[in-house]
Image 1 (tube, rainbow, N blue to C red):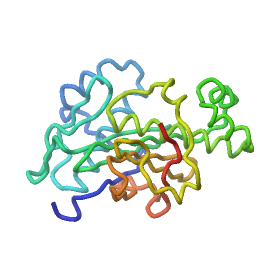
Image 2: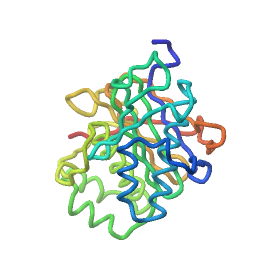
Image 3: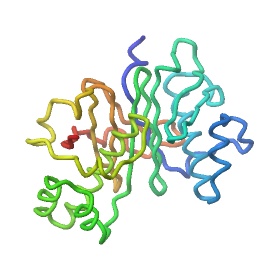
Image 4: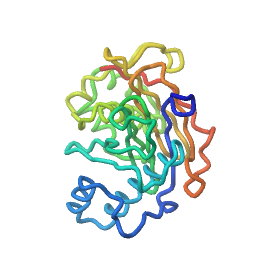
Length: 250
C-alpha cells in the first residue's frame, strides 16, 4: 500500500460547514434504520452531518465520490466500511469512527485496523467531583484530589475521552465499572512509551480551542495525523493539536 494510504488520520469540522444531500439516498440500510429511530430533530441533523462528513473525509483521503462509500452501523453503534470507493482498499480491514460535541465533529480513519475517536467540549460542572468519587478508582481519586478546579476540568475530559475512544476502537459501549478500574501510568505523558493495554492498543489525546480529543489505534507505533479535512469543513486546527500518549491503564 502506498505511503499516502497508510496511517491514521483524524479529521475535524464545524457541523455548520457540512451540508449532507437532502435525499438521504446515500445512507446505507443500517444507517437509515438508526436515523429512523431518532425523534430529536437536532440529533438527526447531527447524525446526517457526521455520516456525510465521514464520507467527505474518506473521499478526500483516498479518492472516489462521497456517495460511493458505503458505511454500515452495528447495534453497538460501531461503524464499518461496507464498500470502498476505490478498488485498492479492502473495506473489511478499514477502521472508521465518529464523534461529536456541540457544534464540532471528528472522524478517525485507518485503512488497516480498527480505530476509535472521541471529542468533548470542556465544561465546568459541579458533578465532576461526584463522578470521580462514584466511578473513579482510588488511584484516580487520589490524583484528582491534588488538582486545582481548572485543572480538574481538563483532567476529567482527558480521562473520559481516552476511555471512550478506547472502547469505541473495540466496537463496544461504555462500562462505568470498567472505567472505575482504570489507573494512572507512572511518569509524564510524554515519556511513556508502552501501549495502553496488553493487546497493544495505544491511546493519544490533545486539546484544541475548548475541545478535548482522544484517538485509540491498534498499535503504539501507528502514525496519526490531525487535519481540518475538506476545505469547506476546515476549522483551522491543522498543526495545532499535539497528541500525547494517555496515562490511563486498564
